[in-house]
Image (cartoon, rainbow, N blue to C red):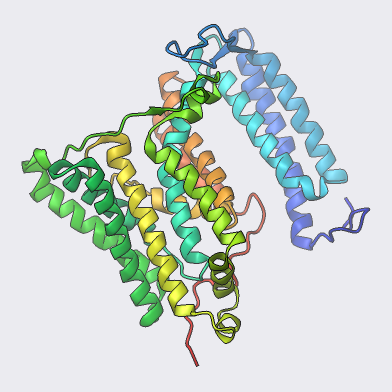
Amino acid sequence: MTAVSKTQEHVFTPAELKRARYLGITYIVLALFVLWFFGVGSIGEGDATLKLVKPTDRFKEFPNLVLPAAIFSFVVAAMFASLGAIQLTRGFKNMGNVVLAIVLLFFVFSFLTWAAAGKSFSFVGMMQETVKRSIPIALGAMSGVLSERVAVINIAIEGQLLGGAFVAVVVGSAVHPWMGVLAAILTGVVLGWVLAVMAIRYRVDQIIVGVVINLFVLGLTSFITQRILNDNPQFNGSEVFRAIEIPLLSDIPFFGTVLFKQNIFVYVTFALVAVLTYGLFHTKWGLRSRAVGEHPKAADTLGVSVYGYRYLNTLMGGAVAGFGGAYFIQGSVGQFDENMTNGRGFIGLAAMIFGRWHPVGALSAALVFGFAEALSGKLSILQTPIPSEFLGMAPYIVTIVVVAGLVGKARPPAADGQPYIKD
């Protein structure tokens, strides 16, 4: 593998060359793993049937995806070995992450065919569940994108999600579900305001402030749940919003079920990603926000209110996280449990880094984490020999792998986490 591409478009750094070698070795190791465990281990166990439609779908006769478990694993192993050899010899230049994504996709399919050998399961149902489980992670990631684009690190996303969920169930049960959603958004704004004041005005360490907010919300919600909600269940049972089927689009085989038979939180999240992408990269607000995050002194010199934009974006991020908290209630189970967010805020931060502080990238990463969660649930139904404790670890293992830099080094905004002192 040469350090300079033929077109002289990109010069590879020593770190990139080292990562490329590691990836090549990883592909070969995966090839051996798939060959031995999924290929040899699936011989004689039959085909895996992945159902692409539900019995209630309009096109019930749409064909299922049938994969011979052993043969498919052998083919995947051969492909991984070939990619590993190419990666070690001449590399994939700027297509490295695309190849990595393809390898991970085929590894997952090989794993699924091994787990479902001789059985059938609803693949469309698992993908629909993937989208649902990715929503709070995606909203947490959007919250992080908003605040970190103006150089405010928001470790408090977990607390904002949990606080939003708690207020959503109480207000939603006592008043109306939509009022619960609004109250959750306002709760996120309040917690965002606390973070903003402490980090921007008093210049307290942003990570410490975020951790304190998380611990405070966790302790407060747990205390009130034990002392009040457990004895007053009428305040812990809000209505769950039903799925809304988009006319015509919901009838599309597979994709219609996965994308267009979801509740309002899913559609709002997709719309929010589109709006933030346009806003950050095609509006005056987005340009100034990114300037504040990259070089606040230069932005201030040009008349941009650094403090104002940091306050605004941090509050907006809190509102998005609060809305994500409402998803746990009105969009999912309708009842509050202690620490029910279960680290989704931190996974959202990992998704933000994985997505390189871009709304579309963050959503894509959230879908990866959502898939890991949905997969662990599906595998427990298929009764695989993998212990349930390991299945439950899947989303967090993916988080560690991503944060460890598997997809390459991600550069945050230059001034991220640095307090600004106006001259």
